[in-house]
Image: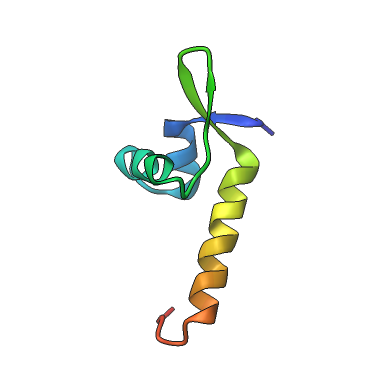
Length: 65
C-alpha cells in the first residue's frame, strides 16, 4: 500500500475529480502534507474522510441513501 498519494491518486481512490480533492484539501476536510514542492495526501486520511461522511450522514435522518 502506498502511504502518500498525489492529489490525482487520492481523487481516483475516492472516485471524485481532481478539482474536488483540491477543494477538500483547501477547506481542511482532507489533510495533506508537502513533500518537497509536491502536495501528498496520507492514505489513512482518505479512510478517515469517508468514515466522517458516513458518520455525518448516519446521524442525519434526512439523508437519503
